[in-house]
Structures are given as structure tokens and as C-alpha cells.
Amino acid sequence: MLSMINTGIVPNGYCRDKPGAGPLWPRFAELNSNRPIFGDRDNALYYDVLQVSLERRQGYAWYTERPVQTLKQYQLWQQKFPLKATNLAAD
Image 1: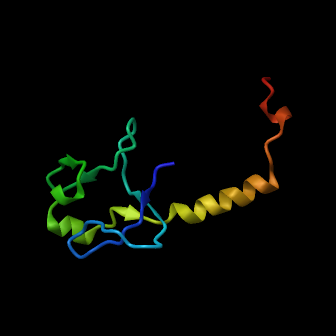
Image 2: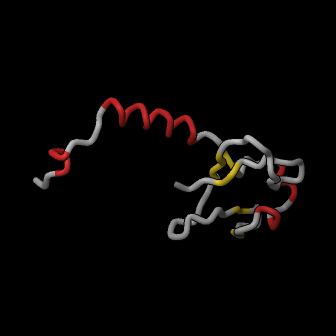
């Protein structure tokens, strides 16, 4: 699972430690490595959000907590519909 420790977004657009915070996911990630990637108005991609212009750091939600709700729903679904050995049989 791709996640980061939620550190709390500070005004200049980077993260810092925040005790008790839940996981964060990057809005965009590189397919093969799952590294967070960030884009700027010049169409350049960066691996460090601090390389993105201040305007883009402050004006865009580069990280999100939204997958937490989906994962909770998935766990409930898994309990309701457990995987059975017969489901794994090849056709």
C-alpha cells in the first residue's frame, strides 16, 4: 500500500511531523516505483514537492487522506464476501 505518515501540511506546502495523524497518499505517483511525483506549470515533473513553485505548493492538494475511507469500506466488503478456495480454482 502506498502511504505516508500524515505530517500536517504547513503554509509553504511541505509536510512536518504531526503526532496521531493518519496516513497520507500522494495525489500522483510514478507507476513502477510508487514514488510521489509533483508537476509544475512548466510541465516539469519533480520528486520533491519543494521543487514546485510556491504558488503550486500552496494552491494544490498534493497529498490526500481520501483512500482511508475506501480502505475501510473494502475491509467491510471482505468480511461480507470472504475469499473461498473454490473462488481461486482455474476455469
